[in-house]
Length: 424
Image 1 (cartoon, helix red, strand yellow):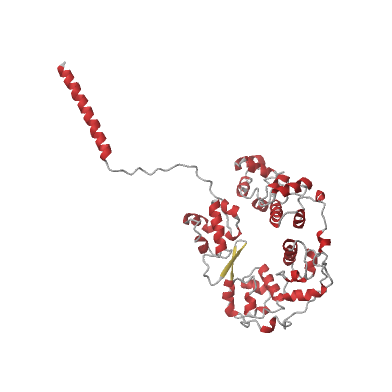
Image 2 (cartoon, helix red, strand yellow):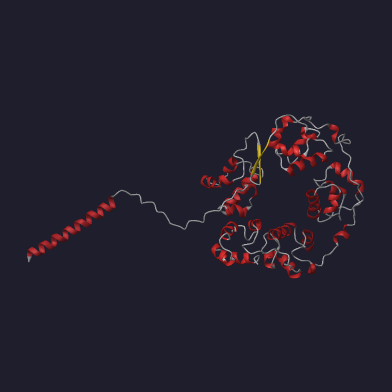
């Protein structure tokens, strides 16, 4: 019995000793590194990338590329800092909101030259790279549009250069005036300048007297009131469609629809001093602005899908609200319900609510398609479809049923409902 008790005590003491040794080892051991913990998350959907010019992207499109709202804000601010336009991949890469990994992922799709130090200045149009180059001295006064295009400018740029030359009276006069052409970037001017056969400085008498290079206008002018002139009227005076639109927007937006004086007209930047001098004898300005401003609109008869910017201002919207509403409607190709108008960004919701309660909405001319028949351009441009456009185009190659395609898209219910507004 005594022997049994002895062994029990011995076993107990042994166990106690083991516990004490283990505790001592635990409390006295050096700190050990824990293994790295990795959290398993669902992998984000792979981006469907296509070639893009970063200068054309708005905030939503940057976010679609996988950037956060804060990163997008940084990118757009950086764009302003560098002059409002990215000129090379090298420059874009310096934006700290774009990580090296992200830039590597996007680089092959970015439509920009590698760096801004090339001797040839590259432009991109329709995924084709063009170079502006010159090999011998030339007088820009004698170049035709086709010759500017051979140099590397686009057709629209060539036309703009010729129109600017005409504004100056048919000659660029000097390198100084040539440099002022808004189509000629500072980089392009630096390259072209050594080859220009023009005086460096503008002659002192150029603005003080009749331009010796002036070309007489062949336009037959008649008296006109610039406050009632429409697009065709301004084009009839020798302005291009783009210039005519600029003049009308300047009048309707900046001046609230009325030129109050000849000075107001003169200040419009697309009307050169020479052109204004040419037009001024024929301008019959209606100075009774009250007659113009009191042309009241019956908004109960104005379709919300055709209401104009000027009419929105007349109703009381400010320029920002009116511009946002017209811009969103244009992107949608027309509103299909009045709630969409209230969902427009940057609008005075109280005033717009009052407007939509009065004005009718005609949706008969709003284009609608099935997913299998919708034009690719429409899918990729429409605000409700563009982020799913590539998937739709892929799925409809196999499936011809809209319901099946919608199911495969796995959209949030609210996004699917928005799509259905424009589906047959």
